[in-house]
Length: 190
Image (cartoon, rainbow, N blue to C red; front, side):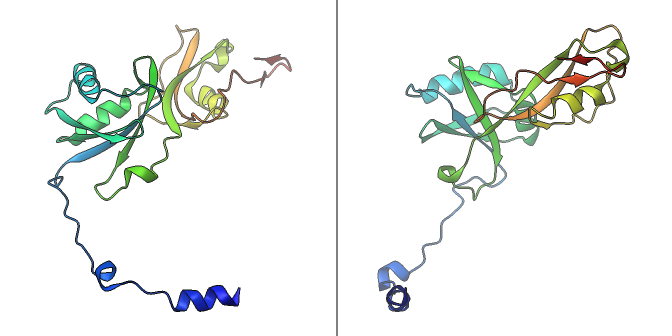
C-alpha cells in the first residue's frame, strides 16, 4: 500500500495534459434538452426517429434530434412546455420498443446517464365500491413504483369499474402483476 502512495505522489501531468481547454456550450443557450434511450437491438435511423416523433409530439417550435450512440438520442427543444407535454405523454415507443426519457441539463454527460425508470398508467380493478378512491389506488400501486401525483383533484370514479394511477416504474425489474388487499369485512382480494 505504501508503494502505491509513493507512486501517486510522484504522478504529474505533462505540460500539454495540464493545459485546460475551455468547452463552449455549442449554441444550446436557451434550449431545453431531453435524453432518450431506445430499448432495441436494431440500429437507429435518426431521421426516422425524428420524423415519427415530430408527428406524435406536435411541438410548438419543433425539435432537433442528435444520435449520441449506444441507442441514445438527444432531443433539443426551444420550448419548455414541449418537453413537459412529451413527458406527460409517457410511455413512448418506437418500432414496438420502449423509449425511456430523461430531462437533462447542458452540462450532463450522455455516457453516464442511467435509464432505469419510465412512467406508466396503472389500472386498479375489482375494488369494492366503497374503495373506488384515488388515494386508495395510489396506496395499492405504490408497490409497483413511485406514484406520480398529477396535481389534479381526486377524480370521480363512481361510474367506473377501475381507478388509474400514474406510476414511475423501475424498468430493470420484473413488472408487479398485482397485489393482495385486505377488505374491511376480513376478506382478502387480488
